[in-house]
Amino acid sequence: MIRTERLCRRFHVGDTWVHALDEVDLHIEEGDFVAVMGPSGSGKSTLMNILGCLDTPDDGDYRLLGQAVARLDDAALSQIRNRHIGFVFQSFHLLPRLTALENVMLPLRYGDTELGLAREKADRLLRRLGLSDRMDHRPNQLSGGQRQRVAIARSLVNDPPLLLADEPTGNLDSRTSAEIMDLFTELNRQGQTILMVTHEDEIAAYARRLIHMRDGKIENDTRH
Image (cartoon, rainbow, N blue to C red; front, side, top):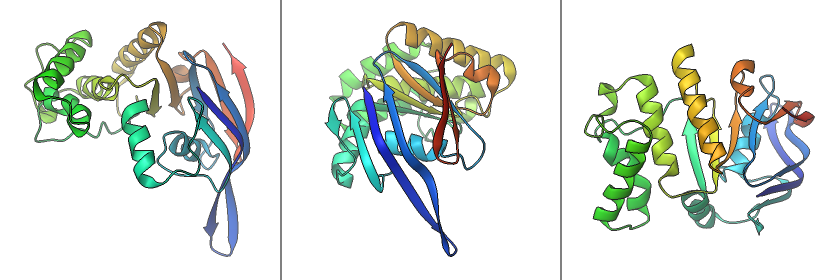
């Protein structure tokens, strides 16, 4: 699903260049569940941004589902994000004036899906994630865990082959974090490919593969 070769990303800081990614080689197969860890400045967020087509590398090759995406323009990258990648963020990024159902429908509406079909699909996902009685609630009427479930439903509504999660439990208490990670585990069992950035060992333990980064390089890559 994902293949990078000698992936590099540099940033100019003061009078020096910082190598956020330094010739990273990474292969991720369909159905994998990967956690990426590392100290601040290790390159894990930069890697996530490039894999999510939110940023482009300075050098190296990135292929998603066999397609070379490292040098695509913004319009092409936007299409790939909408069709092939679901995003889950620490801060949920739900639109406050929309209901849970309307938030989940958004990616489908961007893709010109007919309104009735979009509503039906969003409804089905929210029921699947245990939110059948919260569809008409706005984000400020939901708990943190419920908001993250809405965000997960939104990330899945286009049936993306890849789910990227950036600190998905960062704003949640321990019990709710466990519930969200149990949900990720179940999604992975059903075939969803997941790549997650986290700084918490107990959250990373849910993944089947653990990658440690340091100084822009993959320091360790192990399977549970």
